[in-house]
Length: 128
Ligand code: HEM
Image (cartoon, rainbow, N blue to C red; front, side, top):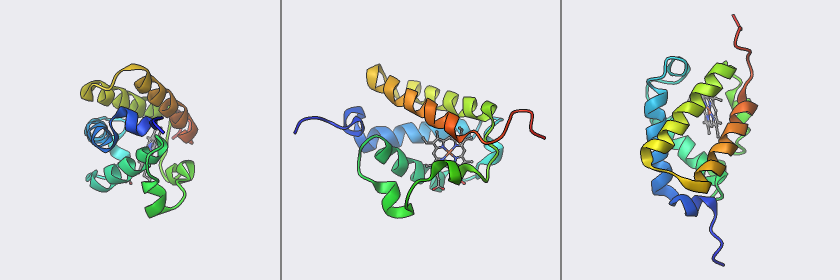
């Protein structure tokens, strides 16, 4: 069977690790995002690497350790506004640029993240 998962096709663990580190480096500096994240990204990044591994068809690392992702529910404690979703996606887009992830796989991956990000929105922009 030589049909690769998107996870293998983008370069597996090494690529995801670089991507997630580049991503949270930007999140930590983003004025709309930094306030809702912990100061230390170690654990957040570790979980995101596990999650994106299974999201792209690699081993089910996230579920093995944390159970069903239930991503929308896990984001309910945070005010995820349309502005924050845009900022999250911008950090991801720039992280993909930074690590040189290109081509149709990048587009498929990003488009999927775009939809998932819309699903996380739980608070209007004019809130409070
Ligand atoms: C956790 C924000 C979208 C996957 C978190 C946390 C915040 C956050 C504040 C908690 C961090 C921590 O306490 O360690 C956001 C915002 C988003 C967004 C503002 C904008 C739409 C996404 C998307 C995905 C995702 C699109 C997946 C593709 C995760 C995962 C965790 C997480 C896997 C860890 C959950 C856990 O605690 O086990 N996010 N997120 N997030 N986010 Fe997001």
